[in-house]
Amino acid sequence: MQLTKQQIEKLRIHLEESGFKYIDVQMEILDHVATAVEERMTENPGLTFQDAVNQTQASFGPKGFRQIEISIIGGMTRRYRKLFFNEFISLLNYKYIALVLFFCFLVYKIQQFFGNQDKFLTFVILSMMMAFVASLTSGLNTANYKKYMLCKISGSYINYTGVFFTLIFQSITTPLKVHLDGVNASYLFTSLAITLYGLYYISAVRIAKQGIFESQQLLEKFKSMNHKTEKI
Image (cartoon, rainbow, N blue to C red; front, side, top):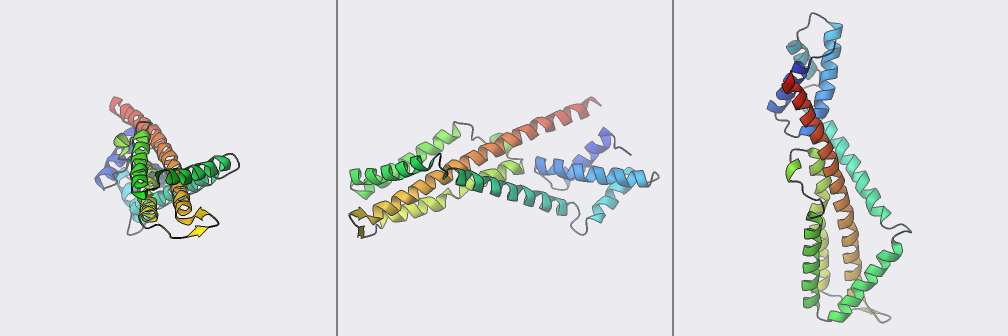
């Protein structure tokens, strides 16, 4: 037995009132639950819609629909973790390795140019701020997608850039007093740290944008569903 659009809307409202605030998670749960309810009502034509919903929820155990939510979020997290790893590794392949090495060399030379690490630290901070502002103006705006778990998970990688900044800050403010065959070990370590930061940040921004894109598609689908329901 196929559920009516009114019944599907009742299910969606029930999920929202139950505390499932992320729209994409709502939609995934709705799909699972609607299918299960339809199967129960088909097997037992005398079963009311509400009883079928209650039985379906009870079938998932003490956590009810929360168990589906856990599974959905876990799947999203694993998927984006894999996407991020693949994105990061792709920046180290033969197409970009020469550019990566050149960037590392350039950072080393800039440190030599400044000589004073305090000035170099100021330069690094300003550069990071400019990169952040540039990413915001190039489509990294999550304001419209705060109710989407996809956007939250995909954007979470940017939050970890602070780890790299701490590493870079420490390497600049407490330099190593070592030279390796004429190479300043402190400059080299800082250059490597900044290069890794750059690769990480680029990967994080790309993954965040993908999450925004997918959230945008779901938003359009959600608006379409609501529009059709209002017409009924």
